[in-house]
Image 1 (cartoon, rainbow, N blue to C red):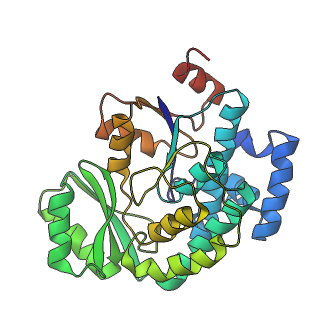
Image 2 (image 1 turned 180 degrees about the vertical axis):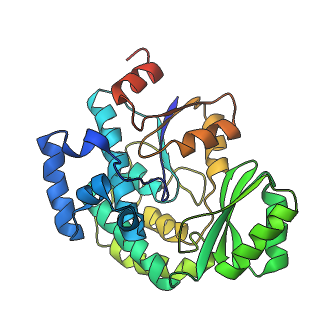
Length: 311
């Protein structure tokens, strides 16, 4: 069994998507619609930057989604199909598009709004996130509880057995990062984001997003999509999918648990579509027997022929 996976914010880089953005008339037509909806030349920003503009949440999220979906579609055009789909945070929208549950243009517009709403709820500079490596969830959670309440700081991403992310108000995150280092963490990295993603602080953004999600068409996924919130397949109903996407904004990303669920359901190969290869690294840390295959800056057809030797 094979799962396809898609990255979240932070994976973007100037020059991303390579030839995917101008590969054929179908892509060019889709870009025209997307850029008209966004009111910004997203392809130019992806290809040429500047980096400061691409890094903005409202640009980074649609850019990553677009790169991820276009690369997966190239594999689909060659006749390859996944058994499961999942994405980390923003990447869940990429998975829903590839599953047929959402249209690409709708999803790009939604994630741009999602980014704006997240930033509006907590003003820039007030929130922060930090990756804690080598300490584990239990010890990190204890540090968070000692420093502040769940409304001020918490674990926002359970990425791998020894890699979690804390998120919250900047002063609390900085204190937690310092204490984690003193407590024996191998590495502590303040992340280049300006909002405390996946915390209760962003619950109002989720409720605002709900209104927009209700206005678009959402169909039953043709392939099971694993939810960040439940680490289980999303429901087949529009209402069920919307509820999970709303909760996702302010709930922890259960990535490690999602990968373990898939491994327990006979998935032994993971293919990463979109910018970077961070998710492939996490898969290997979660289960060293699982095979992970990033496709960024590679010949996608060649990668897929390696993963699907009998197709």
